[in-house]
Length: 102
Image 1 (cartoon, one colour):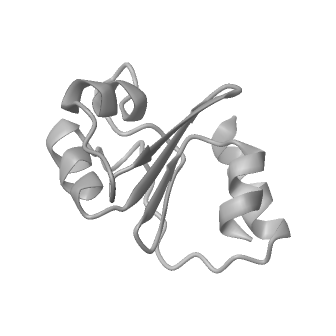
Image 2 (cartoon, one colour):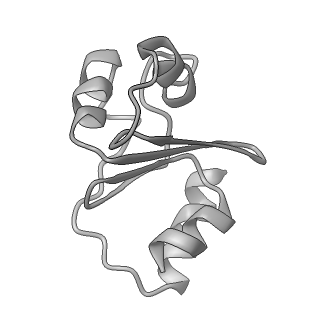
Image 3 (cartoon, one colour):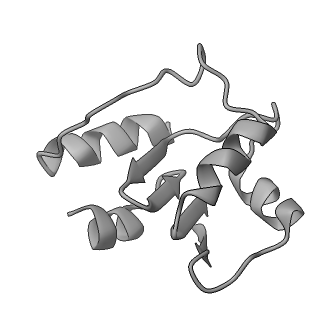
């Protein structure tokens, strides 16, 4: 459901999607997720109404804390996941998208 909301938000914002990966076909496990996160300055992880922000430019959270926020029950990176520059958004939260993606 959040992938649909994310796609609708991006379409309404006239956002250009450079690359889209189907998370059902391409799995991003623990190792790949940590590799991706290492290149980010900021990570937002939304789960329902709760949002966790990691300012990786200033702090280094515990590996377990990051993985808990970013991985789903299957052990793969939760969807939707959007990378914009050195920012990563995992899950859908309209307020976060509005503030940082428009």
